[in-house]
Length: 413
Image 1 (cartoon, rainbow, N blue to C red):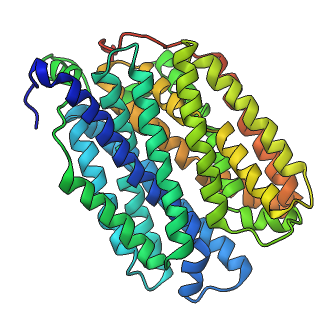
Image 2: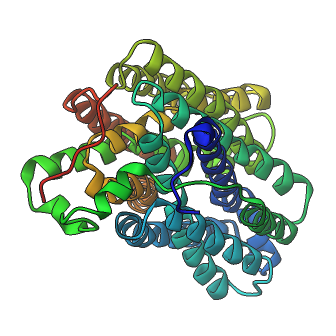
Image 3: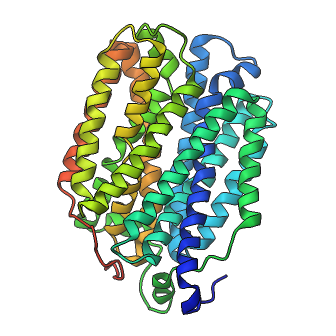
């Protein structure tokens, strides 16, 4: 699986890399959002029925999952730069598939929390490894299309999760997610390691050094800015959509909001948003300007969502689609992270950046809960949303444009 492909196989293998990364991300997203969908029925099945406890225990489990992703992001990133992109791609799929299956057997909150943590560790590796691999094997003028395909196909995993979570039992939903991951590993087609990484292994150069991101001020600021531009995405998904039933009550929505449907509609918007942002970044040859406009659009729909009142259920779900579309710059955001750093720490960066953004749900939900208790649900959400947008706009405006950048270089660490 690590031999260099012949010239006649090159086109096929490039496509294979994109397909495997996309299908891995599909299963990744399925599991990542499944808990948001089955949060209430799974906790009720475990005997937790009080409304306040459902929210508090739901936040606890979500934070355990995200904490696992923070730790896993660092570990997988180091492995990716030390052992290769493929080892992380397939290793992470295996771990989160096993954890998913075990989630279907839980009988108490403590075991549920532990398994969500383990699943988070597994989920942390696939996207970064896949994006790094695709970015390094595709021509520099085409890699934006490759990452667009990975994100667009991958995001549809949430739509399947919404369907399964709505019409199947929560235990069955977890079993299906684990089974899909194991099936992908069993059916995986030949994918070759990145040529850039192979060249890197032959050189005497420092790699897999996570701490090197903090030893140089320029490198540190680049890294932090890459993280900050993604914060609004997970504010939308982790707060506005995950807790959509609670927002539905506060906004006097005409019917009870289904978390499963809200997630599905949001990710339907994300599918089209990721396709649009990826395509437009290629069409206009700019990552920065497209991300900036999508952040502004996200702010617009946040305002409609949080400042409205007495929505019909269809209007509310339409807003979920709009929020998903506007925050659908995930593919471009992760591509920017990959393009900002040299080959010797690229996997570390590309794996940790999206996981720190996902892990930002932990402080976001803690801040949301604190603000909700002190100033109210909607005012707290508005304040947190404005802050998320502000830091993202400042970050994207101060990053360099990376469209068409040659990635075959090393970071001096």
